[in-house]
Structure formats: structure tokens, C-alpha cells
Image 1 (cartoon, rainbow, N blue to C red):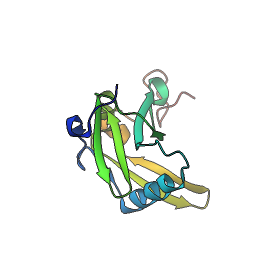
Image 2 (cartoon, rainbow, N blue to C red):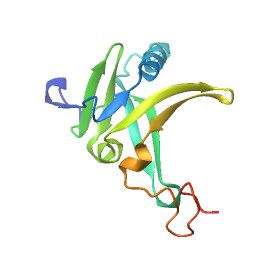
Image 3 (cartoon, rainbow, N blue to C red):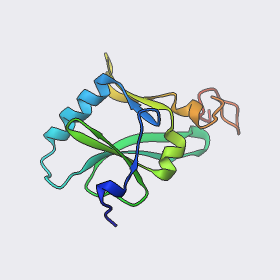
Image 4 (cartoon, rainbow, N blue to C red):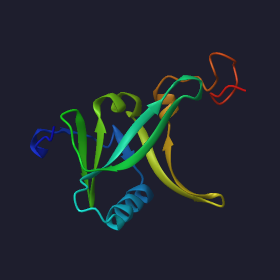
Length: 129
């Protein structure tokens, strides 16, 4: 169900912050997409269990009544209400390393109350050995 922009809930910088590098790369990627009906970049959460939550982004052509939205220069950001519960306070950065460039979600694991170890086997880093 599409929702009028005036009815959408606002996603604040304190909810999900973007570093200047992430903001610039998102704007660049958004201009490279050839689909005219894309509306935003959706930030999402998936998974759970021993490996913890997975965090990612995708382009979207749909908004829902559950989306929080923020307008950025050149693109919009959508986060649904459930994902926001796991993302609140996260900083999204874009980093270039010798192994490749990627978006990084800083402090996301801490925001969900994670301990940094697996509850089942005690392996550090949240994954089973």
C-alpha cells in the first residue's frame, strides 16, 4: 500500500546516521540505477540466531505505511518500523579497504543487546565454531 509522503514517519539522524562517505556513495549509486520508478534506498535487518542480525540495503520502488523516511540530497532512505527497532542509533559508513569497498554498519550489534559471543557455544564474534 503506497503512502503519501506527508503521512510517512520521519527517520531522524539519531535513528540512523550516514557518514559523509556513505551519503555520497548512496547518492552516486542512486543516480546509476536505470529504473525510473525507484523511490529510495531501503535499509533492512535480516536473520538472527548465532550469527546475529544481518544488516543491508537495497533499492525500492515501494513505500509502506510502516516506513520511516528521510530525504537526502539525491535520494530517500526508508526503514520499516520493525527494522528500526534493531537499527536505532546505528551509523552507516562507506569504507574502502585493500580487500574492497563496502558499507559498514557501526554499533549495530551493540544496539541489539548482543554480547559478542554465541549463546550456544560461546564462540567470540557471535558465530558457532
